[in-house]
Image (cartoon, rainbow, N blue to C red; front, side):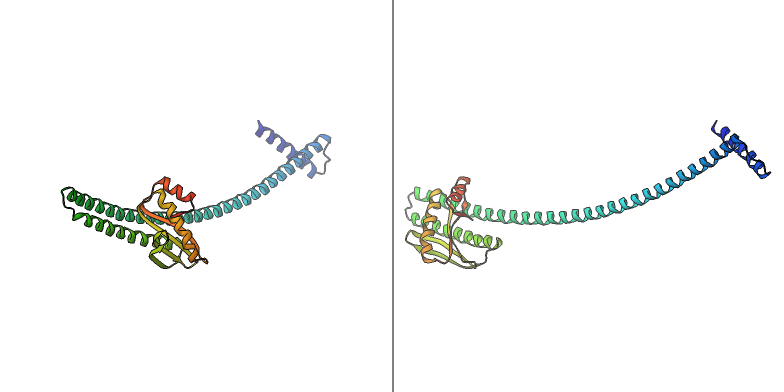
Length: 250
């Protein structure tokens, strides 16, 4: 239908064109037909030009959007790589902390097992009537206590240095009016950790080290004196009690 109309219109326009070439004047109907034909072509041309310009702008916008998407992808990939690197470093630190903790727990457990084994053996001998072994029990307990104290003091110093403290001196077995302090740990930034070491820490140990720290403070007025406690077994209630008493658990 549309093609038929176009053919008819083109035929009419061709006839009118021949008439004009022959010097004849087109009538009113032919003039309007020519005007319609010319206006239709102008409208089509204008629309086509508009479509071409619009398509050009759309192509330009699409290219810009694509460029932005590419930049976003690059930034996203870089951020994901950095996040992955940070996660790996955090995981490595966690693994190292876990390994250190397990190593210390094994050493403490080994000491506890050795103490228990020797204690059971010697107590059995005492029950059998060998009173001479009582002195040996006390000696072994003392030796094992000293061994545990040495291990835990050294481990405490190591942990403090890992946390950024620079330890400059460690004094062991310092006497006070309230009894012996297992260790005084001095740091470069003028801190003194008054350390009590126990295989099993109880509430009284927390109170005692706090009082000892108050006495030590008189001898070191220019230092920040910090009461601290460490041991093979420290329950959650003890830790909370120490925290509430301003005693550091190391």
